[in-house]
Length: 346
Ligand SMILES: Cc1cc2nc3c(=O)[nH]c(=O)nc-3n(C[C@H](O)[C@H](O)[C@H](O)COP(=O)(O)O)c2cc1C
Image 1 (cartoon, rainbow, N blue to C red):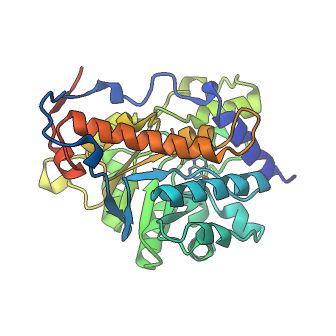
Image 2: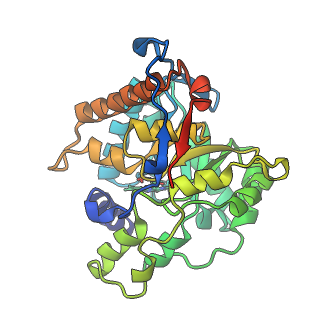
């Protein structure tokens, strides 16, 4: 097995464990949606449908970018694609760098999931390399993708002994990708969040979606530390919970002031635990919700076997929880839910 394949498998194993999680959560427990004892709507008729990247979804949910490029990773992706197509939700794949470099075909995913948005993925540092734009275009073509997500992960790279340390030129490369009009561009973190300042810079480049991917769930400092130093890396210890919580990032990125209002739409992710969190993400202003770690734990059972039924049930449970959140606030659809009563607890 190559080093990259080893790393991917280790990530899959470690990301499933409790030690890979940020200790203090995503901040969403501060959001209190007001209970409506007179909802005047039908729980069975709550409408979660929405459009995303030109396609209709049954609810604003995306399986977050995770994996690809090894046998096990590809098998997981196929299972995720089947479940996403069946449920009518979006699917993001993990970095396609390994697949492109090793010429591993991912066309199968599009065949399995012809109707849903599929989002390609590449790292910001890879994009900034001389062949980065070509690589991004290959990643999109390979999946007939509806958009490409570029992940920004300086903390994760710094925590990896073999990680990329030079982040010069990433902003320019993102601008060139947008200009190339290959497809809509999504920029995401991987669990440490995005600030308003960074979001404004991305917005100025014409990025279509910003996925905050905040602190609160999968924690790469912890995972990389576990992978290399058995959990003990004096350099990274003070940084174990570095980052911006998903809640703080979403609040920060909203603005009432016209001069700092973003054109880019928001995706809420990072430690989304259930359908109520997903609903809170919408209430906090996101158009779309993504979750990675949760669905990784759902797709494989305790013995590492793919478990399609468990995954289907898990997505269905989130649907019902989101519907319930809308119902209990007296909201018949997402639009009315955004205006539902609620407050932020100190
Ligand atoms: C096993 C695993 C692999 C991941 N690989 C990628 C990746 O290749 N590209 C990427 O953009 N994000 C990747 N992520 C980050 C997720 O997309 C997401 O931003 C992060 O895990 C936070 O969301 P969560 O708390 O719901 O897991 C990965 C996450 C997991 C769990």
